[in-house]
Length: 221
Image 1: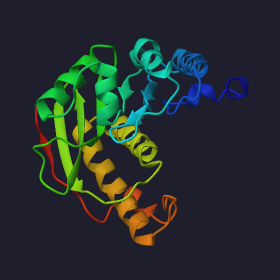
Image 2: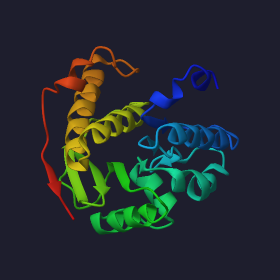
Image 3: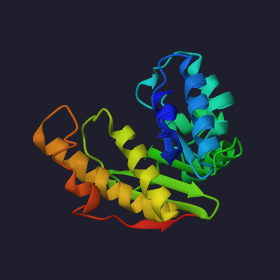
Image 4: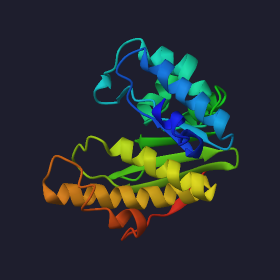
């Protein structure tokens, strides 16, 4: 309300939502998206549909998955689920590359035109790697990085934000995937080497602009 009163809401290019702690938050998110798009028709909405992961299962309010599936995801332009969340949204298995792509198609059919899938652990990947997959109407692309053996809370939030920004500025899912992967891996490696529990966001900020290492992105569709 304050942003709109000051005329600032019309300057918003992207709305990005993440963890929803209660069922009432969806209404506030969708209202904000509607207001922003009414003032700036070129604005987009990215939904990070936080629900859980393959190791912990679903850890949100039991009503959230259905709420995301029925109301929030259909309003999104871009969604950034991990592989577990992708399968939950699509209501189908997402494990192999083929089944993950089919689940992506099912989620796109709900409304979003672009999907970024994080923490892809398909059985046919190279040992000791972790993958991400991005898809939009122009194709689908896959990238692999070495798997760092530690848990980093918040890495999904950083990934969603960086991919959204890169996709917004380049219009290319492949380019956004490559740039996001390079920066996030540098951040995670620095955090792992530091031994800290918190992501080293400030210490790694140069890697957001000039990542020290890049990874090959290959088209899979």
